[in-house]
Length: 313
Image (cartoon, rainbow, N blue to C red; front, side):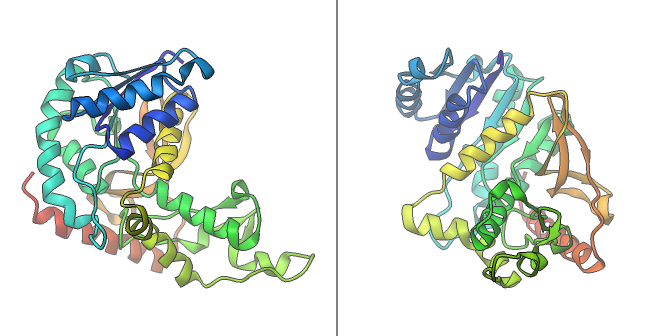
């Protein structure tokens, strides 16, 4: 567990990620950096005081210099999405914030793997790849990893089955143009829309695919309207990704990264299943999609490219 993780941004998301990392003992040192230094100090102190019941994890606030020799840097800084606001409407504001962060953090942690969490995550991941000077295989956005978790949770709720038995992904943008390639979705190797028929102990709830996709896309907005932020699920999601970045053996996750011709798509960051390890991004998995699913993925890429054209990086 000799891993140092720096989190830039000690708001609801950044502090929850730090808490999740601590509970799972995924780092020996966690540094919280925030322009609001008192906030970073208070969050670090609060988490640190619980570590006697967990293990020897050092959690403390710091400046950019304290990020030196970080194995992983997690970027959560940015203006939070407001109720009714799309992730892409945040784009220029959070690009400008990230623009000020990049030279400061990359100077002290040039060898770290960078995990982008702030929204719009695909745009900020693209910005990091294009402007930071860090190798593209060391820049990963959480992308649709959270959307995928929401999808699996929804199917598990519908069929009253453990989430670990549900397999499937959300592809594309972490946002409105995301989609579920249903051809890949299954419950215990049974196609997800045929599982109810295969169930021998009575009729299970059926579901409408459009309703499931709507649920996945709108979950973030529903939670934000109810409690002003989303933090727990993305905290667990990011901690899981940081865990995957600890091992030589690859882990398959839906992450945002630069595509270079996969499915005919290039020069944009979005999510397809990707293999990551302690070396960073190892490869993309070009899963066998239907023609319609490929068109949906290309549409998602086009939506992001339209935003990129309007952004001053």
